[in-house]
Amino acid sequence: MGEPAPLTKQELASKLVQEIAKNGEDIPSKFRHENGFPEAIDVPDIWKNSLLVINHGIETSFLEELIQVGKQFFALPLDEKLKCSAGDDIFQGYGTDSVYSGVQTINWNDRLFLTLYPRHLRNLQFYPNKPDKFSGMIEEYSEKLATMTEATYKAMARSLGLGEDCFLKQQGKNASITGRFGYYPRCPCPQSVLGIKPHSDGTCMTILLPDNEVDGLQVQKDEVWYKVPVIPGALFINFGDLGEVMTNGLFKSAIHRVVTNLDKDRLSLAAFCTPEDRYEIGPLSELITDDQPQMYKKFDIHEYRRVFFETYAQGLRPLDVLRL
Image 1 (tube, rainbow, N blue to C red):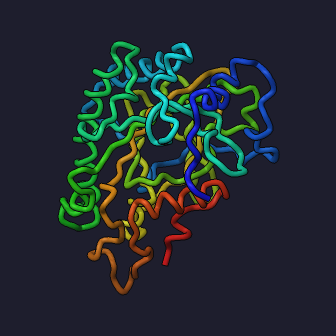
Image 2: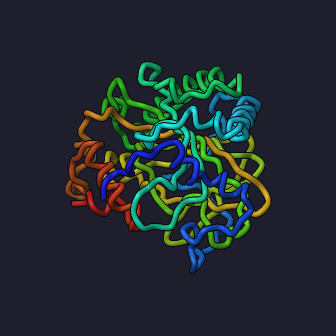
């Protein structure tokens, strides 16, 4: 199975979850997990594959306003939002997860994908002109994210007894941060519909700005699902598949999902941190030992994406295919 086929704007409009929710009709069966899914419990602590970060240097009021500006975008008329769509690129612009091809249960969300950093990689044709504050706030947040990402990579290295620049060197000068505004409309049957089904991210790490007004993110550990608490001003960092590979399995990629809500819409902003496309990805040689042999083969991002699309529809993990 390859990547999703391109869509016209008319085809995209017919698939948007927000439009389906507005119609007030029964939710199509393709969104339903007919056997339901395991409930989550309160999280007992934070593990090394997931972090709640508070003292990150970004004002809580700024983060709250950024979420509100994102909600204002999704409240715009459909024609205005479709100006930001990209029928031939699922990682850019306005759209919905339901464009994925293949037979699978579909996620209950729409999204706006934007390259945030570095600036010269941005495709501004997908950046909204409305709301007025959108571009300025994204510019400021992107710079803060770049600083935070660098500090986190250095902290990862120090925690493993490595030179603090070792993970940064694996990213390349054009390592990117891609933002995903995820919009989850209220859902009349949250017991059988997921905003995003269980998966791990194809990133080194992901930095999530959640909605303070409604929770929804849940993580899995030892086959048990846990609710991620919403703390005003906190950012949630989870390590992705590429981070697990680079650390040779010492840091684990977090399996997570998003549940829906009966009464409230929810919006979050995820920042996906990935290396340059041309870089080969594999475990750092310093982390391969007799006691910790190499766990994953080397690959490039294009091979990873191919494996991701082949496995995601089947509910499998890409790392299971890439494991030695």
